[in-house]
Length: 362
Ligand code: G6P
Image (cartoon, rainbow, N blue to C red; front, top):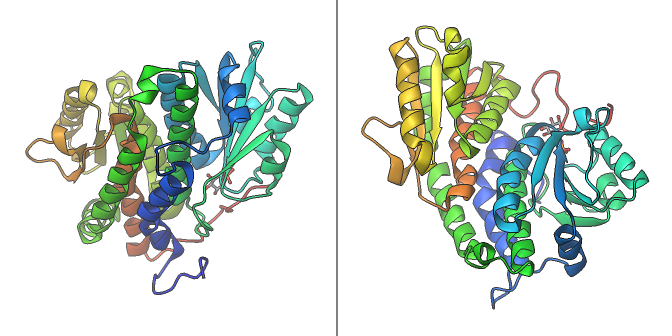
């Protein structure tokens, strides 16, 4: 069955491996043979009618929202903010006249996110829940629902829900943009791009042995590790660091690479692993040189880099896809680094200490 781990030692590895298929299923579900998109008109019109989009989530879902913001702004032209649900719930920012709320929640049960939705409903604002669980609480209580269709996610550390949430937000952004008659949305060949993403994901998960070696060499004995990047690469850095913290207990942080010199570079010690995520043309050179600055202070500098931006000495090269979709690929080596670090430390990958899959208390 879908929730059987078969020959896999842990659900997390199974769920990482399922990601190419999740992408293919989403293409099937949301694009028909003529390239039309199956997204509800009421939903699209409500978003088009809004003056600001608020994306709300916790943990990994919040990180998926950070990528979603870029997609929504580019393709719909509507200003978009992303908020941590537990913060938004008690410090609601000044809202415009017509906000539209998007709740990202794998489980559909996170109490912090639900608290925001309860407030949103009291104010009669329209909302969409993007979730993996049909009929979950946040799905029932929001105006609209879009399903991730990622299959059950059992491992506490979220993997395929993150990539599915990003893909769905891309689908939504394109659909709304097209309905708003925006050329940039019409030109976005998303169905084809998600196909390329699926193929790219497949090639990355087939390089597991290489990542296992990297984990053993640089991470298993590390006290701390850093991911750095700019723009969407920075947002993936946050998710990459969270994965490592959650299951390997290595203290990890994601930093905006331009900010290092303003304080955090003081943390670099001999042997500290620092991974640069480099997928954006306009900032690739900058992040490469920020990484060299850490290497000059003793760091073990590593890279996850997009093929067309790769240089000699890069560690892990991922295939080229549309720039805003690169998080769908760059996160996968990081998921695998966390997995193999945890595994090689002899930890219970699927059941990390102190954490729950779904948190129903505030
Ligand atoms: C818990 C899980 C995280 C997850 C977060 C939000 O803390 O351990 O993996 O990202 O909740 O969960 P949700 O179901 O709302 O996406």
